[in-house]
Length: 284
Ligand code: 7PJ
Image (tube, rainbow, N blue to C red; front, side):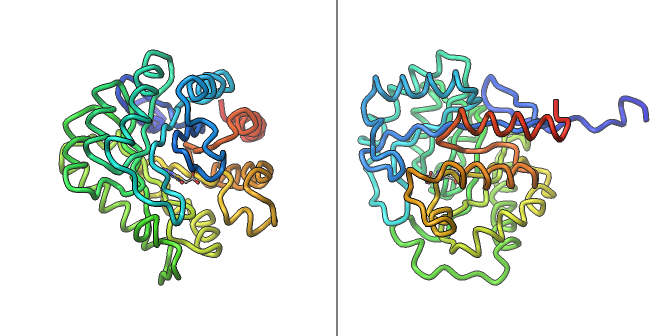
């Protein structure tokens, strides 16, 4: 086959970064909420948050995802001013480093400010459905993660039901991705995330993980966040700070089914697991 006929490896373009998705990448979670469930709000302090981010970078994180609004089930909303006060100083500091800065937010005002401050990715659990959000992203060169969520964080775990969870979630995400592309966002800037744990029961989450190839077949890169989530507690009976092995197992299963960005708390351990997986699969 001539070189020109070899399909280029998929790439995720975000700001000044271009990630080669022939191998999986790791997004380290940096929560700066006083109430993040899995780290007890330990990083609600600029110096400590920065030190933790730098450790994740040394451990091999390609992306740092800063979150100033807790979106865990049952969480209350936070004001734009509070969210900005939490995330902006971190974006400014981390944007100086060789790491892509992502911000986990649903608010267009926050998106605009963090892009201005040097963020490379908008990670929106609401898939840019807030009025004005799509326009802010389209007017920039950042990458965007579109995640599926049923309902609102405060109420999303109240009896979620689906016909076929895999195709429903896929169809929603593809429609949001097409809305981005129609607004001028290049396809290579868009990543899809089925939203593990967001308005889903255990069997829905497992179906989504099993069904990841259906998402990969859309042609958009797939991201997955399973780290320490409650369904892993349901399966193992472990408390949130005891779910490392479960998180690694679920994360590797996602990568084996084609996910190319893993959103995790435990960067060092995940990077080790991926090194072993890549050697076995002969991924360079
Ligand atoms: C996710 C997220 C996820 C994306 C959170 C938690 C809850 N963003 N933000 N995917 N989860 N893209 O970390 O448990 O799964 S917050």
